[in-house]
Image (tube, rainbow, N blue to C red):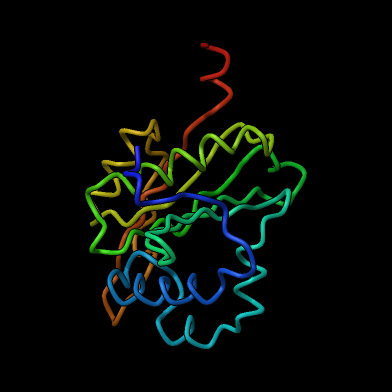
Amino acid sequence: MLCEALTLRPLNETDAVAFKRLRLIAIDDSPSAIWPTLNEERMRTLDAIAAQIRQTPEQIVFGVFDLHMLIGITGLRREPHAQLRHRGTLWGVFVHPQYRNVGVARALLDAALAYAPGMHLRQVHLRVNTENPRARRLYATSGFTSCGVEPRSMCVNGRYFDEESMVRCLDREQAAA
């Protein structure tokens, strides 16, 4: 549950500048948790970012705002291929360091998971750096289970990082309810 001063909503094209600003902070803060490098993200055009955060039947990006400042983000994207359309990918979960430990990440995750059935998703996948115990704990307490580790998934400044794949099966939860 977010405090009254914070609002959560889907992002749209007009949020591209704020999204880019927060992504640059995210990459600077956690370069081994986000795939583009700082320079790659800086080079992205606002049009490309607007397309990335534009809500469609295949994707949605949620943001948490403190007044007009974007302080947290996450995206949910459905796989495009027919055999994989039951799967979604949770990506880009990040909370500004000054707003951590107040429930922002949990609220973003809850919003994405609540939205997933409307996208006809039966399961949601994610990847997390194995050296990020806080994020791994958040996902585990949100019902995600490990389904493997990819060794040396990322290389940041010559250092390799493993990534854990996790999944939450939504259709099993609906059947149990």
